[in-house]
Amino acid sequence: MVSTQRSWPHDRIPVEPRGCDTFGLPDDRRLDVAEQVPLVDYLVLGDEPHLQANECTACGARFFDRRNACASCGKTEFTKAAIATEGVLRSFTIVAFAAPGIPVPFVAGIIDCDGTQVRANVVDVEPDPEHVTLGMKLKLTTFPIGEDSAGTEAIGFGFAPLEAN
Amino acid sequence: MASDDIWILGITMTKFGKRPEDDVVDLAAEAALGALADGGVTIQEMGVLAAGNLMGAAAGIGQQLQKQIGQTGIPVYNVANACATGATALRTAIMAVKAGECDMGLAVGVEKLSGAGLLSGGSRKEDADTWTPKGRYGAVAGLDGRVGTEIMPGVFAQVGMEYGYEHGGATFELFARISEKNHSHSTLNPLAAYSKAMTLEQIMGDIMIAYPNTRPMCSANCDGAAAAVVVSDAKLKTLDPDQRRRAVKVSASVLTSDPWDEGCQQLPNVNTLTRRAAVQAYEQAGVAPEDLDLVELHDCFATAELVHYDNLQLCAPGEAVPFFESGATWRTGSTPVNVSGGLESKGHPIAATGIANIWEVCHHLRGEAGDRQIEGAKVGLAHVIGLGSACGVHILEKAA
Image (cartoon, rainbow over all chains, first blue to last red; front, top):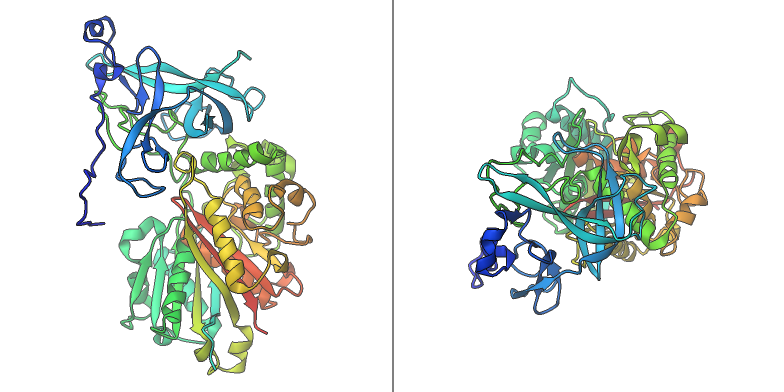
């Protein structure tokens, strides 16, 4: 695992500061919103919430985690790419049995967002195979998942049916 | 003149199931001593030992085993490669023999999993007092259940459902019928953890774990071990006729990992690496899929078996559903798959699985499979996949 050739900053690509700063809002608007943080750093909040990938500048491969290099071509330069907020349900499962503390049932799925696969829960839908179907059209939605002891609200995401059932 | 062929000289699997009186070393020793006896050789003749025990990967099962059955000073490789651990151990011994470092080697896989419950997905801890970004996703809280699922029944459910998205026909009932087949097959296997037939209604009506996988459609956690002795072609020629007659040729031994493609880090892609392993294996062996008399493939979930029909080229591309529906993969069909009962019924003691499936194939090629013998079996394929991912494919042929 030890490499002597880590010329590229291997620990992480630059990420925006978290908290209010990630909203991309003008300074004068910051006080208007509650203190919020995204569940993951690839969720961009603000007026138009969306997911953001690290896209390899050489081959276009997209990743949601911080990168050491590209798993497709091995190059080390990335740019931020906004992911389409609508997609198609490519696969799913309805989890009925999970680790303690995880509410069940819930729908886990893979959403094809204009060619980029995204892992997410399917929300705002009855968790049964009559209501969740392969190929259904979905859109990104965000929602609070709770406040911490400092009163900061964490915002999670999921994909909801594009049209009401 | 000797070729560089490698042969399985001796091989065994223990009874799978609940083995409360035996620890991992007992099970490993039972399998290892069994394989040595089966091959008519001793530990003193082994030039290499490769051993796997995934749950205790840091403990060095190889040396623990040596301390019970023979500390001969040979190199030991403790391997861990998820559910491909057993196949990796076998391949390690094969590589050592093939490289000419020794002429005989022992591979062992062992696991104690009875009552283990869900083996992954328990990583979500209680939320912290403050939302602090952590890890590669900068997550402020646990993601299992919030951003998809980490549990294997759910991951592999999605693998099967994705096949349905691409090709259609992958219904809950279809997957349950695959499970019905494997549970039915296991009734003829006295070493299986479970050997009771289950009706389609029982399977579909059982506890739902992750739709469309109910409990009997998931691999059975159990205890067990398997071991194999491999030998070079040159060495085999010096052994007695009885040993030579029962030796099984390793016509292909392949290990692959997951090549990158779009989406493979969102849902593990179990297809690409299996396809690549199969293509390499058929080429190495000079065998075509239609030549196979039986296949043991990695049905860690009923939803997984379906996709591997396609990945192993047992059917035309995209045709796994009609292929199964034709009855081809039942033991009476044209390509019997998992006549052992598979992981769903025989059981899945993780590190043992990749050698146990080869034992099953060898058992038939030797004509020693008793009630479940596939008559006239001459060539078989064994496949395992471990997430991360690693895929092992071995093609085995009856001695000419």
